[in-house]
Length: 202
Ligand SMILES: [Ca+2]
Ligand SMILES: [Ca+2]
Ligand SMILES: [Ca+2]
Ligand SMILES: [Ca+2]
Image (cartoon, helix red, strand yellow):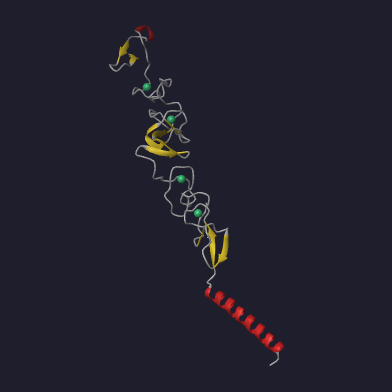
């Protein structure tokens, strides 16, 4: 074998060994997809990934983080009263765990619960038998008052003018078609105290 042939052979063997070594490295490597976990909650961003054999720093195998900038927001997280959809079910602040007894979650803050009453006839007096619990703002169609004696008649409410001929207790005082008075001079005959602070012409 000539010297030149020997050099060629050695060069060929060297290339072969290097190639075999790099092949065997590739064979050992089980490349997979890793997803960025920017907020460090263990759940990865499905739209930010890279492939590699070893786990890159800041990357995880999970790809279900719907908000990778919030460490408290991930699938099945505890829902908090914070104006954020923590658990990713599409609803914000439903049944939050951090509001206490007698509190509701309103605009991302726990606030004192208030009972409101349905005002079906929009006379601003509510139906004591139809309630809803909310925060400091009354839900649409509800009021804080609960003294409407007929919530289907906008002309019937406490203090409304009493129509003395319609057979209806318009002012919700328990008397029907009465004429209220303060002195006998207000009445054809006498003004009588009913014993409950209500004076009615007799
Ligand atoms: Ca995350
Ligand atoms: Ca929330
Ligand atoms: Ca009403
Ligand atoms: Ca009346």
